[in-house]
Image 1 (spheres, rainbow, N blue to C red):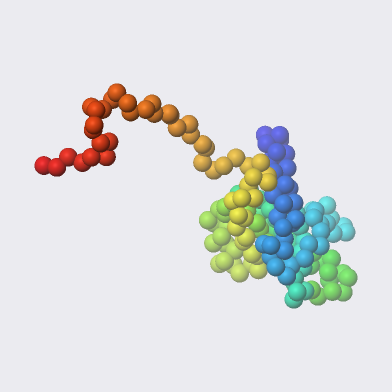
Image 2: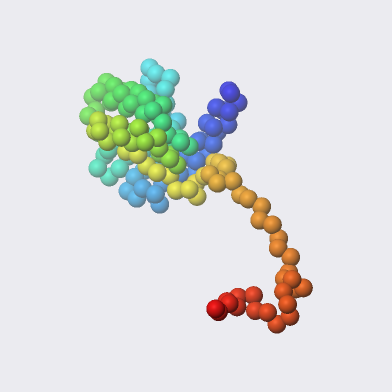
Length: 164
């Protein structure tokens, strides 16, 4: 169980790092400030911190599949960031972002219904390869069908339709 969590976290980090390396492509006008961003006085840290042209700071949480756990994490990160900014005398706008390949329906509903100022960013499936994430549909082995010679009468058209 603990090993599974470590592997999942490693995959999430690889997806985050790849997304961060292509941030300009995914989020034009947004700049990467830090990965694994933390604040004084707390051990929690957001996966990524960005800032846009309007001086809006975004704290990111990357998940393979986002659930209420991601919501709890991003809320804590936002609160710690706001506390740190207030202590520093800054009043910059801070938003949360949960980036994932899929989202639990209750999470999506909650974020919209409660107007939490949290953005849900669906990750492009191509990023799954960066994290070594197995495809959602397992590949199947297609049997090889032997040539049709000898199975049909000579001169028979395989696509010929019978007429009544």
